[in-house]
Length: 293
Image 1 (cartoon, rainbow, N blue to C red):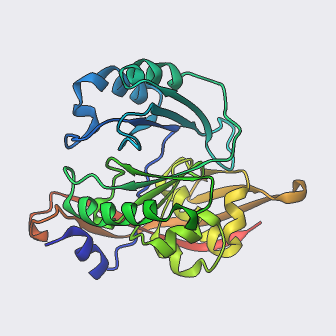
Image 2: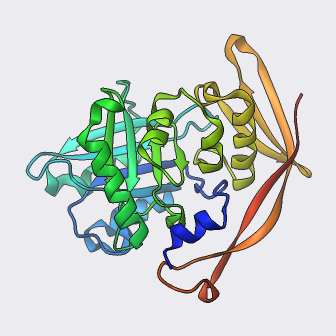
């Protein structure tokens, strides 16, 4: 049984599965990769530094066999924001670890408008990502102009949620997406076109502080559309209510609130294994009583 096929058949809702991180650290690292990047011995000090910083480590398949290696840090503003802030270095391959350790604590921000589109193709972790993700990434890389001049497509390591393959992360937005295809990612990266059919594929923004806030943010996205991703926002819990404060153009502030509850618990399948052998479950979140005040 392919986990992604089962997830589609069961109409699993991926919202709230994006993970909540203070940032991402992206490092070009040659294949083959082990099942988890934390198992690469040379990256052990980087893994520890990223963990202490509340960030997530993502490996990138090198874009050039003999070129410099990219080390990129994305950090969510402490006071909340619209997107992650980026710092980047290009170094020799043997300098990647030192550069990664330095950039985790770096405050310098690169201002040039670049979007990094990360498509999970980590076959050692999951066969669905290894097949569906690799095919999608190569398709996008073959025609980069379709996404825009400032978009870089990367094959990346495990992003979580392999049952939602093909999965992708868009930075600096920090948004994660499930069941991806070329058309969907073109609309996500450009931030235009129909959004209704993409809402059930939205896993959430990693800059939101909890899965419940991610679920509320998606509900607000359904009301406001693509412009929401350009607006500073932050969420919090207030009793039984979850809140999302959005700074709208013109200095206006809108507060959205709703009750976010667990609708059902569903098994998390291991690819290739019968669903009855699943060892974990996860909650499917439901948003009720959405209102703006």
